Image (spheres, rainbow, N blue to C red):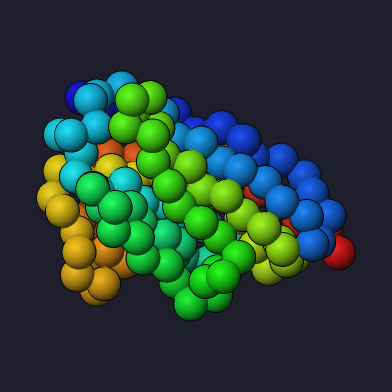
Length: 127
């Protein structure tokens, strides 16, 4: 069973930055895709970004140009650098992992294609 542990959430003012980390308990090469999702109160969990090894990235339109997903294979860790944060980015952010290489955009956004999930980390952006 793969374990994913997120960290880096917190409270930040609008326009600020945060970096989320997701550490996987399994060697990176067996988890072909790592993703970030978020869930705001009263809303469904939505896709934010995904990293498919070796270097493919994909983002939801609302975060393009502000968020960057990256990976450190040696540390089995995926990061989500979030800049120019807005109050509407407030949510619990979840890390997810798939044993499939999710290069298709539709499948990348589909929660059911991810096999493992972290416990989530809260991000709150004040106006």
